[in-house]
Each structure stands twice: as C-alpha cells, then as structure tokens.
Amino acid sequence: MFEVNDIPPIDGWELQQLIAENVQHEEFLFFRFYAGDEQDYFGPDSYTKRYECFCTACRERFTEPHSAGPASKWRICPRCGRSVTPKRWAANDHAAALRKVSFAFHFFQVGPHGELWLTSCQVRMYPYFLIEKYTAFEYCRYVFSAAGAKKWSWQYDGWALRKNCTFRHWYDMGGGRRDDFWVLPSEQELAASALRYSQLTEAFAVLHDLTGYLALYCKYPAVEYLWKMGFGRWLQEREQGGGDYFRRLVNLRAKEPKKLFRGLGKADLRLLREKQPSVSAAAEYKRLKTAGVVRADDTGICFATSASIVRFDTLFLADRCGVTAPELRKYMEKQARRSAQLLPTLMQELMDYHDQLARMQIGGEKLPHDLHEAHARLSERERRLMNREKNEKFRTRRHLLAWMRWKYKGMFIRPVDSAEEIVREGEEQNNCVAGFADRHADGKTIIMVLRRCSEPRKPWHTVEIDPATLKCRQCYAAHNHKRTPEAAEFMDKYLDHLREVTKMIRRSA
Ligand SMILES: [Zn+2]
Image (cartoon, rainbow, N blue to C red; front, side, top):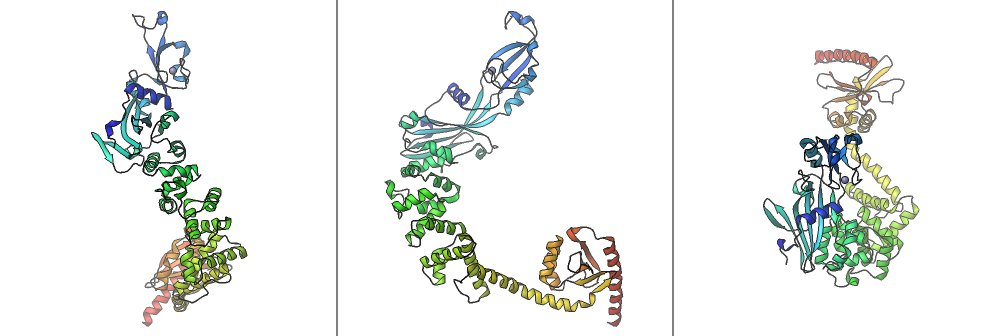
C-alpha cells in the first residue's frame, strides 16, 4: 500500500507551467512611470517619457511611450495581445489586484506502479510577481490503485491520513468557496494506469465527487459496467442521497456484469435502459417485479415510478386491504383510468383515506368504488368532526354573548359565530385573529365582528373585548389597517353602551 510521500515528485517550475497552461483567470498589466536610466537599460529611445510595464499573462517586462497611453485605459497587453486589467505598479495597487486571484487546482500523476495520484492545491498569485507567477499550497493528496484508495490532508505541519476519500474542497479547509480547475490524466497516462477502465472521464463529467467515485471503483471495479450499460446516472443519484436505493438495486460485489443486477433479467434491463427511471423508481420496480406485482412493460415502470414518488408501499397496503398486491395494482390502475387524477395522486389518496378511516375509527370500504370521491367525502367529514367540539363551545358562547349585539348608524357588532368564521375572518382580513379562536371558545376573550348592515357577510373590522372589564383590547380593520373614522365612532358609542351595561350588572350584582 502506498504512503503519502510515494507520490511522484513535481518541481516548482513544472507546477507553475501546469497551472499557467490549464487555468484561466484575470491577468494584469502593471504600469508605472519610467524616469529614464543612465544605464540606458531600455534602449536608445529612453530619453522620451515612457511607461515601465509588466504583463502577468506573458510575463514580459517592457516600456511603452506615454503617447501610447493612458495606460490605465489599456485592456490588451501590447506584447502578447491577451486581455488584461491595467493596474498601477505600486505596492498597494498591485498587491490588492493579485490578492483577488485565488483558486483550487487539482492534477493527476501516474506513479511507477500504475497507481494514480491526485494533488489538490490552493493557488494564489505571488505578490513578488517578477519572480514567480503563483504560490501553490498543497492541501490534499489521494492515491488510487488496485490495492485501494487513500487520502491525506495537510494539518498544521504534516499529512494526516483520512478515513474517507470524498473530494475535499478549498472551503472544507476553512476557506471560502473558490473555482476548481482540473487537469485530468491524458488518454495515454490513463491507459498506462491501474484505472484504465474506471471511466474517469465520464465520471468527471457528471459526478460531484470524482475522488469518492474513484475510491468506489478501486473497491468494486464492476462499477465500470454501469456506465457501459447506460446507468451512469444512478451513480449521480447515489451521491445525491440515493445510496440506499442504489445498494438495493446494484450488487457491486459482482464479478461479472450480468450478476450486477441480481433479480433482474434481460427484458428488465432493456426496459430500464430505455425508460431511464430514477434509481429509487428502479429499485421499486425491482422490488415489485420480484414480488410478481408488475410486468416488464411500460405500465410496470409507470406504476413503480408513481409508487416511489409518493412512497406507496404496495405490498403493505394490499395486505391491509385484504387483497393480493397484483389486485391492488389493478385497482389503482382502474381508478386512474376512471378519474382525471394521476396515479401518484390516487396512491396518496388511498393512503390518506386509510389513515382517515383509522383516525376516525370508522369501518369503511377498504377499496372504495370511486376512490377520489370517497376520499373527498371522508376529508369533509373529518373536517366537520374535528371542529365539532370547538363549535359546540362556540355555540354556547354565541348564546351567552347574544346580549352584546348592538346596532348603530347602519353598522352592527356581534360575537363570532363559529370556528370556521373566525378562521375565515383571519384569512380574509389577513390578521392574527385566527389564533384567538381557542381563547374565544374557552371564554378567555371575546372576538366580535363589526360590519355594515348593507354588507352583513363582508368582513370589515374585528374587535377583541376583555371579558372581565368589557373594555376594547384591539380593533382591527382588514389587513391590519387602522380602523376607519366611522368605525371609531361606532366603537366609542359601543364602549359607552357596554360601560352602561356593566354599571347595570354591577348594580344588580
Ligand atoms: Zn502580455
């Protein structure tokens, strides 16, 4: 097994070249006034006023006459023609510009035993740009071979072996997010390596975690057949949280391609390749096919896909309904044909329907003739049931508070009627009155509606009254606007009225 320092050496200049050839980033043209030189360093015409320039793209140091300026407007290097950002060649200016350029750089090397090494570097532009272009800090090393995969990351002052081979980003090291630049092995390099069949290029194109994938390949070389059989997408889904389904579907320990999918035949694989279901749908298809619920055809894939979308457990529900799983499938497909609903919707409805039966503890048909209609009916019934207790309280309160009704100048006020009304009031007026429903039902507060006699059903103002003192706690207009002047006048009169009533009550008490 390889150790961290078995990596083939690369010298600094070689690395600089590799980065320069493979990375695109902002380049700069530094300029400053050239005062002339007794040594005539820049040639015979140095007596004219000139700029002294340095281009980071071609790394040329040269002068240009002032007449070619102003240099601050140059967008292209006069020597190499590459696009550049002009910056004053003064410590603060050029240092700030150079500091902005940083990126992660990853490159492969083939070792003497055919093992493949990957090095990850944090690269910045070198502040002493005349000497070198980049400064590269190596933060991660990986090795892939028939003997397995290993990863090391730099910690404080040495390399630490990591347990996993998942790809490490610059930001995993505590920095910000940076662009990643890669140099993949060339075809010849790859062909000479132990990873010649790893489908590295295909994996690089679609996977987020190339190193994790290469480690998987080192462990289970059979994974190459997935690409060849057209199921590379499942590897993508595997790394995005579909690992469980992937494992149920694919047996990576297989030594030959036909054993990769235990339990699936040629017809199944042809169908899966043609329909390209997600890995979870394919795993569901395999489960249903094995259980004899679906056939290897379009409807089978459709059923499995629908079931996987809503997590419809066909076998479990069939058992609950007292039918066989194929019978349940036929029932669902028939429901889909007779209603305008899609299969996943109907599956969800059947599950809801059974939950409702259980919640309300009522016996009902396990597989109703018209599922969509039966579900709607039961939902309505449950809504009514759930509000019943509260509405009982509301009715009592309405009766108790009937004396608080009052009319004045074409407006009237009354206690709310029902839980539904208080919720509706909350929705239509977009204020928080719905939260008071329970407190009203329990007598801890009094919620009243103030309306115009001409529009008795249209929400206008909502009023909260303290039940102990009969003082107004809040008065809201729709959308929590301030109450209107006429409503204010109404409320003044109404509160006077209540004060009178209170006095009366106190007197008689
Ligand atoms: Zn240049």
